[in-house]
Length: 115
Length: 376
Image (cartoon, rainbow over all chains, first blue to last red; front, side, top):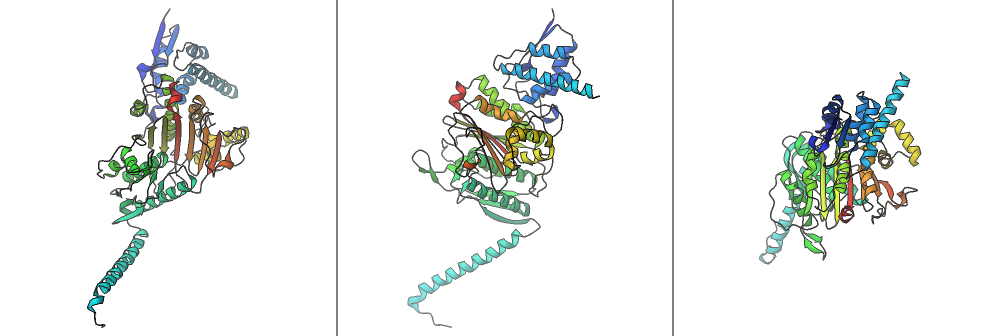
């Protein structure tokens, strides 16, 4: 069974804003360089460890994880990543990220119905 | 000509001296008036008197201080050399101190050749025993005001009330910049508390970068300065964190871009008016922002989250003419006596809002927390 372990702290100790244009270590870059890269290897499991950084702004989390759906990642894959998250310092992050993914799925479905 | 009498000579000379002083004062007054109205920037040094209280916590002091800042900007526009006279200043508070620093920093960066100097504030009563102390001078020195204007400072005592005042600024939402401030926090603070503080302060900083500058600030200077200024102050058990920007202000951002969302929030929280304070209150619930994209924003609730996590915390958002306050259930502070009528219904006096007659022309988000509370 192939598992990819991702430690956010290896990306940065100071997670940044939503987009790279607004500051370094953005959620956009984390998604593209780390999460999508890991997903492209098609492992059976991706475990993202959120601990070890100073903290997260909600825009980083929304763009990194909710953005997966906007980038065309399958809902099940994104929800599975959320399900395997490790966040011992702040367990509420897991719920928050799951909500972002679900909102993005809802938004995508709504757009699909309208088009 | 009247003959001078030797015995009266002393009085005559004194009267002549007084007359000369009066005439000289009158002449210099006229000269100052004429430089005020000049369109070209004068190279003469013009003087402005800082108010007795550099403070925006009390509504009355806030109006006086903001009028002074307005005057300061006008002087900077038309003169190349300004001297701020602090002779009357006996009190300085964190938010106003940060605002003064930010305004000065902005003017110096964008008005070429501008020189700012200042006279030193006098001693004022302070400390436990109301001793005479150089508290205002110490505070200005501590946040780097004298370094900013390039004025040499003298050695003075480091007063405990301002000893841990730190400020920094930046133009990007870069969390690593806050490292030095977070490192100055007590080591006993656990990782959870630090992460909550980081979340709130980072989102405030990101909001400055993303949303504060869709148009030039309405001060007539036509300056685009997208920086934010942050302040951390520790005194005994209290921690204050402030983030300031000199942008268009939250009310303008909300008025221009969030009409649908705003009307939905207004009906949820029972908003009846659209004063600056009402719109700031609404903004703390806004998840969607000016881009009209569903996934943008989400920063407003982050500002509230610190208070929801720490019961002794207080959040105060000042933007343009409005102020909105949210306090945790254990926080002791009350609305200022002029603000009592503005408690928000259904909040058990934990939230209030008010407006003043002058605008800060920007936004200051401030949290006050008990360090003890964050060690739990």
